[in-house]
Image (cartoon, rainbow, N blue to C red):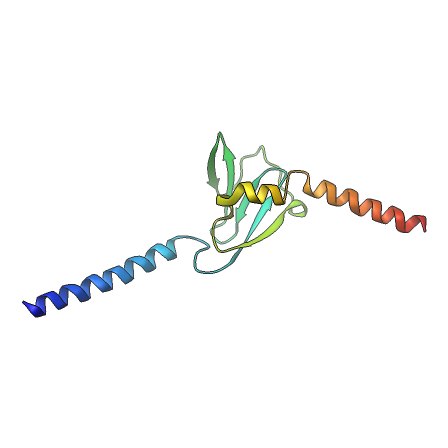
Length: 120
């Protein structure tokens, strides 16, 4: 009887370790920091590892291998986000940090700096 209880305990421990490893492995980004891209003007995320785009549609997150055609994404107008979890789950914080028009304001500031240098 004691041997049967020990065997069941070992099997349960192995299954628990196996299952917990599977859960972590199935979630992209977990277990280490990864790079993601965010397009502030369209509020679209790109996850390179699974090659998926994430966007909001009627208050729900959608995803696919390509964004819908209504989005025009430019590599020049994206930010790189390093995170250990899915950044779209923190969309409100990221949207405040990189609001729509983020690159337009940077371009305007760069143009003002260039104009000042030219006027000297």
